Length: 88
Image 1 (cartoon, rainbow, N blue to C red):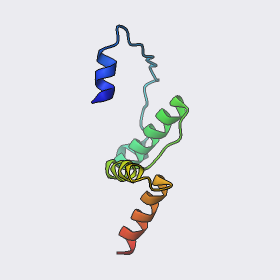
Image 2 (cartoon, rainbow, N blue to C red):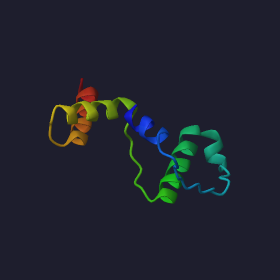
Image 3 (cartoon, rainbow, N blue to C red):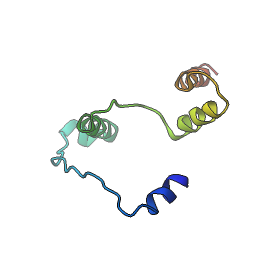
């Protein structure tokens, strides 16, 4: 909420928009929506120059809570949580 307020109270806000070429799915991607989504995600990450991450919304909430509690290496907690979930 604070970030929204600070953005709205600025006289001018700038942003950069880049239009990517139209992505046409292959036949394999047409049959597998997850493959299509993953390939588009990788293409967008490459255009932005950032790595692809597999964090869910719940993972981000967990990392935020861990950071608030001053726990070290919040992203490591996500991996531990995933392992514990898989193992039961």
